[in-house]
Image (cartoon, rainbow, N blue to C red; front, top):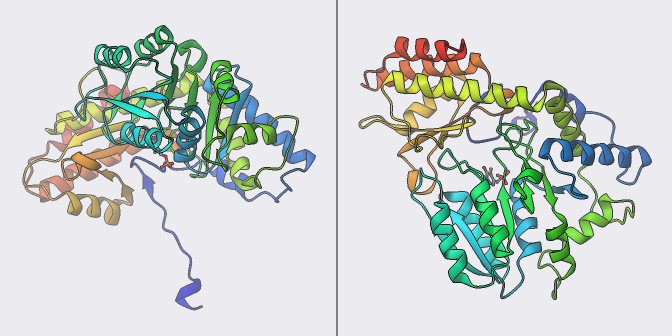
Length: 393
Ligand SMILES: *Cc1c(COP(=O)(O)O)cnc(C)c1O
C-alpha cells in the first residue's frame, strides 16, 4: 500500500476546546446507508431532529433547525439574518468568540458597539446597559454564554432584561454550553441561539443547531434587504426544514444522522443528569489543578465546568507539555488563544470526554510532566482533591 493511501488516525482522548470525543453510537449512525435529501424517511429523521433540538434547547420556537457547517455557520446565520446595513448592534466581548460575533455584525453592515471585559471575566451588565442606552435604537444585543477562549460563563438573565427593555433582539452564543451547562432559550427570552455539534453534544463537527424566536423571525421577515449570505439565509433554510421542503442545499446526510443520535443520547441521559455530570467532573478537575499548585485563570464564580483555563507556570514550556501529553498519553488539550496564547492551557471536559477517569488520568499525566519541567507539582494532592470532589465530599 502506498503511503498516500495509508489511513490510520490514532485513538485520542480529546480534552481540548473541541472537538470532544464522540460516542460510538454516533460514529456508527454516520455509517448508515445514505438516503436522498428529500426521501420521506430522511425527512422524518429531520423532523425528529427538530423535535429533539427543541427539547434540548428548551424552546417551542417553530424556527429550529441545523445549519450546514460547524458552529461558526450558526453564528454567521444568526448575525447575517438579524443585522441589516445601518442597524445598531451591541456586542459583549470578553474573549475571542465575542470578537468574532462583533466582526460578523460589522461585515453585515451594522454599526457595532463593543462592550469589553478583561479575558477571564464576564461582561458587566451595567456597562452593557449603558452602551445600549447610548447607542440609540439597538437592533441586536449579543453575548457569548460560554467563552471557550477564557473558560468564563456569562449569566444570561441580566442581558435578557436589558435587551427586552431596549426592544432589542438578544443573541446568545451557546456553542460550548449546549448539552453541558443549562441552556434555557425560552425561559431566558433569548431570540437567536446557536450551537455546534462538536463540543458538549459530542458529535463530529459539521452542523450547527440554531433557533429563532417569533420576534427574531418577524425581524427576518421585515428585512428591507435580502440576507447577505445566500447559503445561510434562514428564510431559505426554513423553507427546506418545514413542510414546504423546498430544495436549498443537499443536507449533509451523515451529519444529520450523527446529530440525531447525539441528541437521542442527550435525552436518554437526561438534561439534568448530564448537567450534573459536567458540573461534578469540571469542579473535580479544578480542585485538582489548584491542589497541584496551579492557578485557575477565569474569575471565581464564573468558571465553566466544561472548559477550564489554567495558567502556565513560569519556566514551563507550553508546547513541550502539550506535546508530551499527546505523545505519551494520547491526551489533547488546547493552548491559549489570542491574548492568552502561551499564558494558559484550555482543558475541556465536554460530552463523552467528561468522565471521572479522564479527570484523574489527566491530573496524574500533567503532574508528572510538570515535575520533569522543574515545577514542583503536588500530584498526590491533586488526585486526592479531585477524588474527594468526585465522591461528593
Ligand atoms: C467553537 C466555538 C465556536 C465556533 O465553532 P466551530 O465549530 O469551530 O466553527 C463559536 N463560539 C464558541 C463560543 C465556540 O466555542
